[in-house]
Amino acid sequence: MMNHILIMSLVINGYSESSLLSTLKNLQLPYSEQELNKIKNDLKSELDLFKQRELPEAVFALLIDAYHCEIKDGSKVKKAACYIVLGIDMEGKKDIFGLYTFFGKENRADWNKVFEDLVNRGLKKVLIVVSDDFPGIIETVKAVYPYADHQLCFVHLQRNIRKSMTKADAAEFNKELNKIKLSSSFDEALDKFQNLCNIFKERYSRYMNLLMEQAEYYLAFTKCPESLRKHTYTTNVVESVNSLIEKIRIKWLDISIPLRSLKLIFISREKI
Image (cartoon, rainbow, N blue to C red; front, side, top):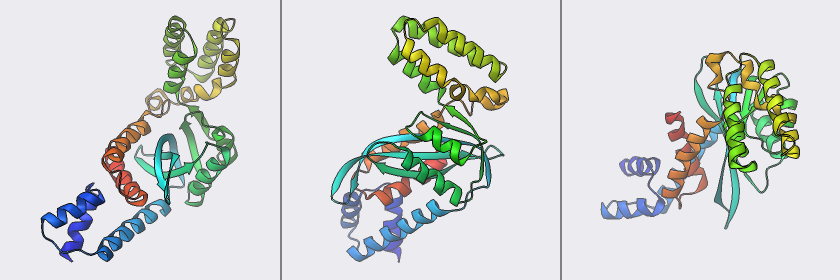
């Protein structure tokens, strides 16, 4: 029994399987493959319970970000996108609501699965969804939570501006965006944003048209009271969780996906 507790403790605290076996050998402690497999199965059961747990019926915000990596699928290593959904309830408490892994290109079908899972676990009402402009997510949010506002990450917008415009133009555009961010209302922000795009439309016609089409999504956070805007204009809080995942993933390459997922989730929940 003591060996079982020790082994589980080593796994939970980040030991890879090879490190775990080496440690047990150095300590001259008996262990069996069956015991190790039982511990893995126990932890996988905990992960399954975590992923199936009931969610609040209504929340203030959902923040969604993607973590791209390579993970093992059977005998093959494939490129995958892991989506973390972080919720902020009506009292301001943050929690990780889900971790979803998909192989291949992002698409609406995957987002349908994510939001169907959230609804099935009890989440019926969301005031605002914050995400990047993932393929298909805008349409899915509209279908599942039709009364929710949807904010596309403002920080990602500014990063994309720097990639899509000359250095001088991007600096000027983002300087004005920072002023627009402080607008007193959504209508004021929308009007200023469209005027800004019109100034640069001659030089970047196609890109400015795209920005104006999505203006309501980039500025949805301005509908919130000023005290709440800092929580709803960017997905940075989820990105910080992803940074933590990357550090652990590098350290823990040879642990199976279910165990790694469990470790990452519970460490991440302590950090947010």
